[in-house]
Image 1 (cartoon, rainbow, N blue to C red):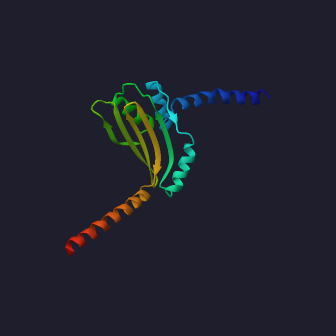
Image 2 (cartoon, rainbow, N blue to C red):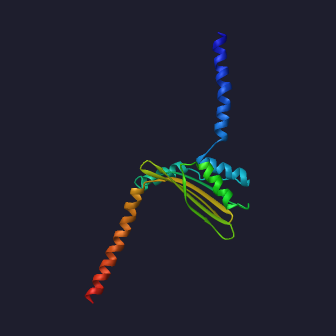
Image 3 (cartoon, helix red, strand yellow):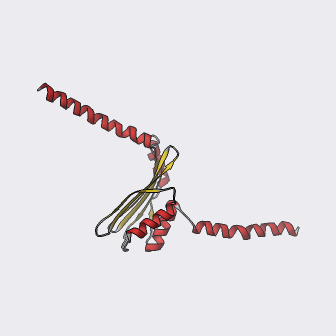
Length: 172
């Protein structure tokens, strides 16, 4: 009987540190937001009903966009070292994410970071945009083939109008 009581106690003694350490080593979108809140003493507002919005965008784009997460920080008045912000975001996202764009204004009050990583046939996008006193952070998953098809539709119409204009010029 004592063994049966000892087993749950040992399990809890081992499980509690694992859970605490796992929460402390939070990565990805939530890890980035948590680090920004801690480092710059700000509070990120999560967009209400983002799960529903993500579902609707998935349906509206025929699967082109999904898994949307959005956070907004208003009244961001801290001085931001672009190198530090870039390093912090890169560490929290992890090595599977690759930074493709980093833009910093001359005064340093605007920062844009865009990271990507493959998700099988899809592409994960992470965008952090600090503009003055507002920071927006967005993560989503896109289907590059679907986006290429959508872009090609507009490109096709543009070529038709160019070729029609060329014929009109040739006839005159």
